[in-house]
Image 1: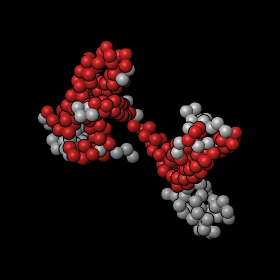
Image 2 (image 1 turned 135 degrees about the horizontal axis):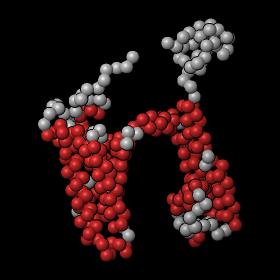
Image 3 (image 1 turned 120 degrees about the horizontal axis):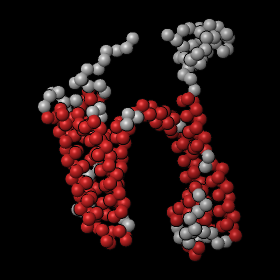
Image 4 (image 1 turned 90 degrees about the horizontal axis):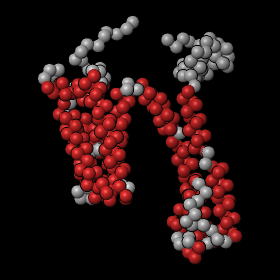
Length: 293
């Protein structure tokens, strides 16, 4: 039977229950609706304008990093960056004002992202190079999932994250093995090639081993002796043989997540656990299984 219909002025989600204003009247509540809801045309227009502003601000930062454009248009781009920063700071202040618990919102995922959107430009007053970090505000585009009502896709993302978390121990063992190979081959190449051929230290040789295993090398460091080239060939073959290991581990865990859920109840006859969710009889002894309801 369907539950009671939602009434206007009542929180509908966990976020709203935590941040819903104490009163559903007045200017504060109206701004809360505009900032956090996406139902009326005004609320959707606010979100769409915010997304356009985010895209434009990221474009400004990207263009300002191009030497030719920066030499000619640096001042307008600099002014535009500060305009966007003031705009996002004002919006962040409004979000803190309209919610019931500003500190809780500031510590939430979206609250941290909103703060990071304005910090790089402010820090640029002390550290000019930090302006480039303003592109982190592109993470605010994650709100588009809420605007376009795509939140239901988060369950699929959660499934991917759960599979990655369950395979963490196997992946850590794999990374430890790769690190061991990198150290051994780095030290070996440092011994064989030496500083005369670019392998000035074991860390430098380890860097060469990493890029050789992961790709085919960058060409900035290369072996010159016949023995060194033989060792490099062996390392490349090792890299190709183990590069698919984490993919297989993750795929196996993901396939397990996609399988039908198993019953926790044991077979009352032989005690065999974990039968398929739609199984009626034990796969070992054939005895009837208890109902899952």
